[in-house]
Length: 251
Ligand SMILES: [Zn+2]
Image (tube, rainbow, N blue to C red; front, side, top):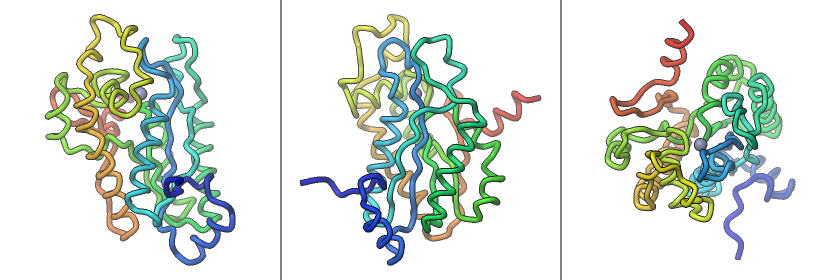
């Protein structure tokens, strides 16, 4: 038997129309990610595969009130273009593309959208535009990466090096080992890399808190409750606001 269908692309237009018209669909997730180098040992689709997993699980948890748009698999990765195989689009193209997808959903009757991100390079470009997009769309739309939802104590329980999300490092290697071990090419891992700290157990420990956190955001958005969760990353000295970091770098 097929799984419950939560991806919009797996629904017929009749099914989607009826679910919108009878009020079944309360929110939509738009996954955004990347196809970019992930050091020597992780496959380049990592960010897309992991955020799609989180979106899928969150939608299954809230079935049938949440559906998932087709993931956007190429993001802003200009900073990795020295590594052949990385795909990138200009930030203005990326942000406008995401906006257009949200606008199409709105025109289809969707009133609540969570843009769920899985690639750090997309954060700043999207944050620069979100206020404008929110006003133009006139619906309940917000942007978060799936790691924003982690309580700091969960991060520091599992991450020995104390960093998250990092890049193809302890966190992403652990997630890949737990979610899609066939995408981890352990023999190509660099000797000195802290990616070596990645384990299946750490990944398994971090999956459910991410899904739960995304579900919590969606529940709050559906209930019309304010979500106070800004984009952030975790370092050895604690959680950092990615918005504040961006402002400091601009000065
Ligand atoms: Zn990544």
